[in-house]
Image (spheres, rainbow, N blue to C red):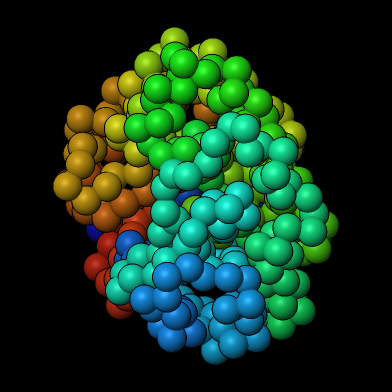
Length: 364
């Protein structure tokens, strides 16, 4: 393979040009390339959380945004020396299960992850779920948004972290096994809860964007490093792997469509376990970007190639994220178009990026 000639953009304006080409699938000499620095376990970057390890159930008053500012400075310092196309941002504690906490799930913290305890919700309790703007966890989330915006001002944008979709929210509230029975025993209860969860998530993202305003004329999904020239939403439906294609179409697709259509731009995060639903997901025309993970120990790039091709054939932008290597690059170059393609490479340190310069070589 020809050694890469570094063509990294040197300004925000040049990066934005590549993002616009990505969203509009305009001809490109190579994909948009970004490095996700810090590995798969971002919790380790937030040392202010460590004092809460082992607590049975976190409450909003356990978290104080100002106590995390040194950690956020450390996250930004990880980017020093990284040259790529990505606009980076910060977000309210990215690995924290914010929406699950807002919906009443107990949250605990371990050595490498934070999780929400599944189960316990009964549909008869729906009127008692706090979907209001005064939800304490919702206020805490927006407190982090405001603190980050005020502290970093126009230097670093504040974007969306991992915010779950309705299937993940309901799986957390009901428990995954109970949710599966609900598909058949209580589909109307599932639909009513999915509608409330979807509208709650839409309102949360709109409130965040009202606080942050645009950065360089657009908005950012922090975890995926995606900038768009207008308001932008991130969808995630890990629990969609529990749906058949027909169940997805009748029970979940309407809410994914509702979330995507609420914003001018939308991207959905998928794992290989949900790719059997990809053709149904692509039926949501307002989903402009499909993001697919190359997860450690799961499907390889070669196995997922038919799905990557499906996304491009349906004229959607495609973001592939994972620990990509030279072999992956060669395969992607041989079978995909660089137009509307974004490769996000997960690395542990900035120094590791210097060994991956071939990703910037033209695909001609």
